[in-house]
Amino acid sequence: MLEMTEKVYNTAQIRAIEQAAFEQDLSAWELMQRAGRVTFEHISKQWPMSQSLCVVCGAGNNAGDGYIVAALAQAWGWRTEVVALSKGEHLPEPARTAYQAFQDTGGVIHEFHSKLPEADIYVDALLGIGLSRLVEGEYKKAIEALNKMTKPVIALDLPSGLNADTGRVMGVAIRAYQTITYIGLKQGLLTGEAADYVGHIICHHLKLPAKVLKVIKTPVGHLLNSQHLNQALPKRPRNAHKGMAGHTLIVGGAPSMAGAVRLAGEAALRTGSGLVTIATHPIHAMVINANRPELMVSAVDSLDPLLALIERASVLAIGPGLGQSAWGLSLWDSIKVAHLPMVIDADALNILAQQPLRRSDWVLTPHPGEAARLLSIPVHAVEQDRIGAVYALKERYGGTVVLKGAGTLILGDEGLVFCTAGNPGMASGGMGDVLTGIIAALIAQRFSPENAARIGVLAHAIAGDIAAQQGERGLLASDLMAQLRVVVNP
Image (cartoon, rainbow, N blue to C red; front, side):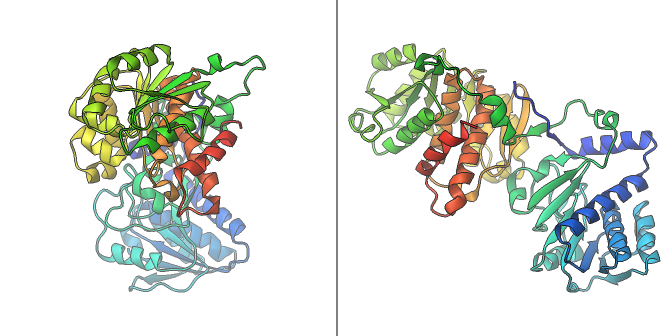
């Protein structure tokens, strides 16, 4: 089992931690001051030459954090202006106290009138984690005005307009350069539409006592990071042989779709599978390994040769280029009852949506469109609540589910894991086939399906990020192969 340390929370859990802090005689005012201090310290260190700050404040305690930041900047001699969408007397405590503290420094507070003053840095303190409806009116206009600024915008706790639980944009949201979030990572910062809005995330726990943070014994999930590769992929023993590294069987490649299984097969080799066999349509079996002779290829047009291959395999991956013709359907019917751990992708997922089945030992790897078909819901419903969707998929189909996309989600019996690595260049044909090969190869090397999915998603994403250093647009799935070998040898 991987040691997961970066915890992820939903809003109810963050509220529970705050309440536990209050019960330890840590007041809301003290927490607000801590949030303001760590934020201004960060800003002043990151931009030491800056001299002006504009803080845009709303009507809740998120505004209070903003007023504390503004008061500290004012005290340090920065030219500081606050644009407020709510009058001080309408603020809740302790935000009202923070408002008064800023005024006591001689701070200037302006009402919002469509434009914002010029500044070196802007701070978004408009809306907090409680947002549950679409942003309208003056708040919408203020967010749009901040998004027009060419200087950095720092979001406090989360970008205003973003749903803290789903990552959904509630009509309009701040496109932050950085998000400074407090107490713990919110799940909505890490998946879905949030990827285009949060910028770089910095999390401050506000020096809360360990016993306060431990009030939540089971967080929503955990965040993957590159250190998990070091933890999961130690050097091989000197006496290693290919039998110890497993035998991956990949089934797919209908006529005109040989490239998908070819990519999956090479990815499995580059991830360290001892042997890789591709079971594919006879029409191209003779040429599929022409420039990768290490791949073993078998023509499969009936049940008997496939069963013989399954007997020798450690893991079975099905779907890349499978199609939904009679050939692909016949292979699926033979494979779905095999007594091997499996990775299910692409057309195998589409067939599964038509013929639902539940297993505990497989990994499903849908993108949002495939997830929508598996759940019989619209694609936009998946994207609006990716976390809800991944739980629904696991409930219906069992095993481990990888919901691909910005902020990939991996859900197995050990809990939900978020992966924020990866880049838009990976939105190209064949990337999912590469991921299938990676996960299958890790299972072949005796990883549990769940841990194979976690490490496989991370290795795939990091390889994509390395490959994208030469540019995201035009990134090919095959560009990941050379990087994979580096990534899986940390």
